Image (tube, rainbow, N blue to C red; front, side, top):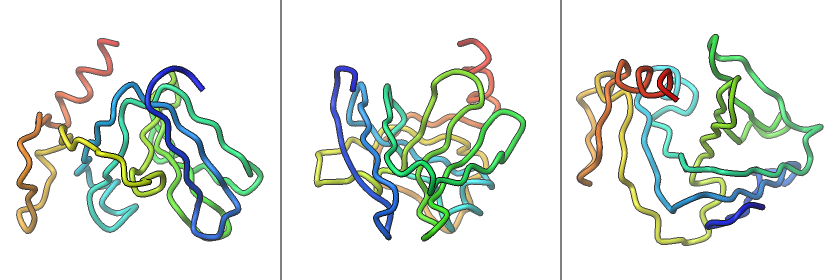
Length: 140
């Protein structure tokens, strides 16, 4: 594991265990239609993941959800494990997967232009539209 905050977790059935290192304890929400379809609501994820170790990879199924990203889940119980870009090292790991009671900071919302009107978070966050997200990653 690289330097930074670390957390561990496992899927519902225990077939997959993950260990993540993150630069900071920040959580972001993604409101894109794919994340909401995937999980039934916004994806709340660690976005500053610098390293991830997965035990039980034979139980991980990866679904190519777009031309640029894929989503991993346990093929036994269906627990969501990660969202990752197909190029580079960007991983977003659902915070509930590794939450051990850390003092998380919810600070970012992306695809805010796709967020339905029926919910809103009270936290003050940095909000980005889908286009702003794409522009930011193309500049990386």
